[in-house]
Image 1: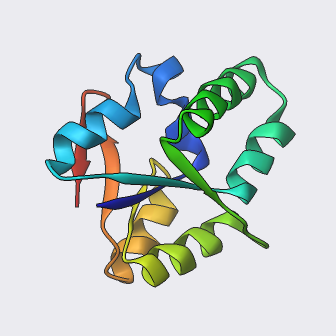
Image 2: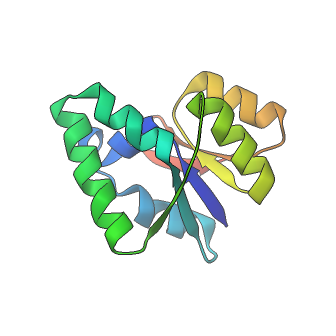
Length: 122
């Protein structure tokens, strides 16, 4: 399963003490490939908060460890996530209600945190 990580999903380790990579791998029950858009990284940098800084460090470790591939993107991140997910047949990991709704209307699978307790694929 190919999965694109949205910006807000990268805060899970710090907000809810969950490693999204481990949890998605368990949930998917198949080989997983993770992707992040360059625009997502840019969003984290622009936020300039302690949480965003921690998310960037966490993300960089995963990129260096070859757990995530960075895809160059241009434009609005949510639209790019939809475009790339459709192009690669990937799911999107997000907790953004609007992005989730848009992705589902485009028949893109969405991974999200339900009730701050467990990940779900829909």
